[in-house]
Length: 341
Image (cartoon, rainbow, N blue to C red):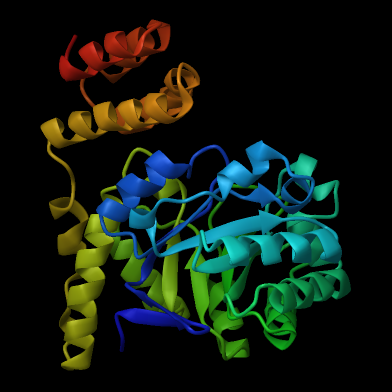
């Protein structure tokens, strides 16, 4: 067993990846997760058509810093030509190590444009898009992220993964929910296992990783090559610290023949931040957001504050006060008075 995964010609050292999340995985959040041990981080999904039309906002999503690498740039679209031109542009810019195609986003504004999870209902078009992106990517590995299927009556992720492999994808990520589920219910790890059995390229499992032991359990259950964390990292970049530790130790135990006696649950508490670390990180996150986005960063931070302090003493009072604050200094002052106002 290895503590790395080869995605095409690119080797990722580590097995825990940060999922692409719209409005969340911008540079400040990616940086925090990378520092805590995320082996591969993904940008928010960027509109290929927007980049093709020289939309500065779309292209900004794909801009990365040198200390973020390795990083995957995720793009979405429903037409091969704009996707290909965007892939060529991104590969030439060198901002990312991998180009990922979003074929799983459930948002209506995406699916109505025949993109995101809508492509699971049109595998022929999906195949043409994958092939076009690979041809244009000039050797940059291309991966595909998709879901279990469109709804309970249309579960086709196994066939979709096989199609992606035949089209040349270097790896696939499977979110174990249908489009109709959005993010409700329980992720289906059994279907991820079936995908893994059906293809030879790496399979990244996604869904319901909220603590370190979940990462090993998913790998044991599905045989996947790596795991991807989305909502489990919201307000909790430290989950990657726990996942990094558990995978390193578990791989060593497995290679020594001790996997069956390895206690995966001992890692579920010892990775958690101290109160000071949590609030210091929240302050730093806010400062990075305002440095990058100006006053808009203060509004963007509100959801992150709610996630950081959820379930902690005085959380409701602190959240309400922080949401009413109008300056960065006011919020920083509130956070530094934790945990009780």
